[in-house]
Length: 435
Image (tube, rainbow, N blue to C red; front, side, top):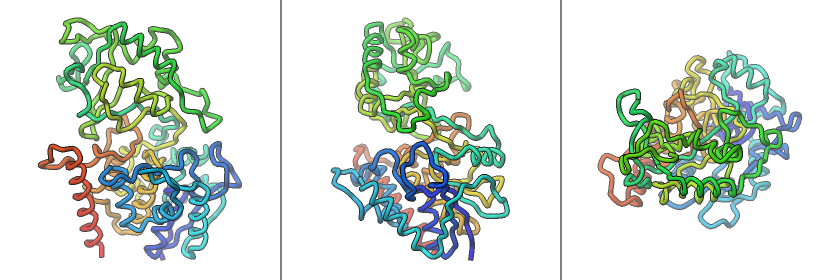
């Protein structure tokens, strides 16, 4: 019987253990709580949700729905328990937090092929098979061991995320394409630039300073920001013109509509691994998501922007996965080690469950198989393993991670429905080929 050691009793670790047991293997699941607590967790239950209790929308033919639909078709334990512990919340799949964790704990404890060890892992026996799913609050000792195995320069401890917008919702009659001083690596204009005059800049700064922030849920991280990744609202508090001499500096840019340099500018950079989306450069922030949408839509050219991801600054231990992992979430330099969950560089509950499922199934295969690129799971793992390693940032599932359609319908709803149909067909073919 194949034996897999799993570090972390969170969403990814529990799903991985369940998949291994279902495939006839033996899973040894390590969870350091309650012997050693984290700043965020309150209980010793497995799969404890420490932030929201929502697993995002169940609106059919949305990207989050597609990811959950694939997990359901693959026999996900956590998706089945989420359905049983659901509470009313409109289109969102929202669960009773305590009941959800209790049911998962009960299922894992009662599975004879899963052994739970309540202890901290601080060293990796490289002769064993491992799935590292220790989450964003990985202990310092384990982080040091992961750094030893992967290289210390490939392990990050703070996650500074800028917002991402859907390219189709940027007003290019206002935003202009240019690189500073006309310089770029390949001679092209790499950035879209949203120009602001002085009244627009002053109004933006006023709104930014008045916006509500997200309350910190991890006490030790409050106000501990690196100078290199300060939230834009923290920069604004340092002086009226701080942003204009920082991420919003207009130097080296001429607005072709006016022939003059803007008073300030917001630069948008295309996401290399995410077709059809742009990153707001240097715009990490700690505002509530609703506040972000309101304030950032004050930027000329972004009045109707749809946000694929909002900005964040928080504690998050994660590896530089594109430099380390295969699409099956396998460590290239040590093929008996897999990564899953937030430590691999995914954001979100369902994304963590999905990578746990993928790693658990892959660890039981010889050789491990990656999910089809057309699926949401496959595209998420492809992003994790092949994004730009020089500027790797964690990702949620969105349609821009999936391959474009060859002949896409003009209507966005029809286009999304076709992407979902293609994904389900690819998953079904993948499963049939494995039988």
